[in-house]
Image (cartoon, rainbow, N blue to C red; front, side):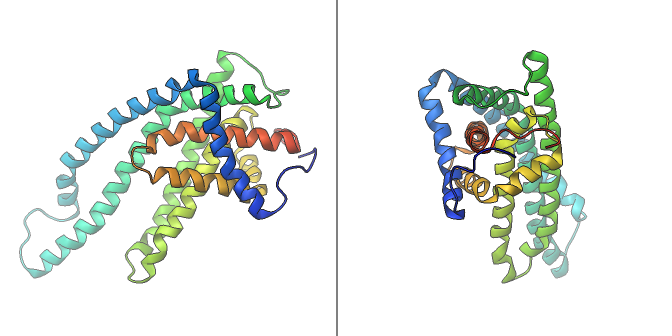
Length: 264
């Protein structure tokens, strides 16, 4: 990276700079209300997906539990095993359903978020001197982003599986929410800036290096995104808002330090 070393200089300042970028994304929508339907439409589609997955989950859980344990079981030990199977089954089955919802929702919202991200770059005059234009490029950028998003999701699931045993250890399991919270924050931050990074055709490792060099700022952004997820009925709005705010964050970094380039 080259350019000026402007912007927040302290870790605390960088953290709150990331938080502020999310709210600047909301201000962008306020100043450009014509793009609000592109946030609402994927929300409506995501609700349909959620309702469908909910009925599939309720309908299929009994069969899932019977797959863990045989259907005909009696006695004290089988009763204990049934309780354990319910606990483990609900955690695993619930996570699978959530991941299915997140995956399908991401696929639905990705083209909308890609377009919104481009509009944010235009609005902020983000450097675009190494970018091509056109419908074909838009499709290519979207597909590249989906490919890297699949890798990110696989990493997230792998980390969840590694952390899962902690959930079942008494006393130690109090750290489980913090572990998953930290992982989720990093995931959301990565997802937020990935649209801009994909348009620069950066490799997967170059993207991780970009985030690592700006850990405090991206962690601040991911933290406010994670907090928004905890508010009821806002979950499916967060993905497009994340893309908008993440693009604002990227534009600020590019203006301060220069635009990242592939192989740079």
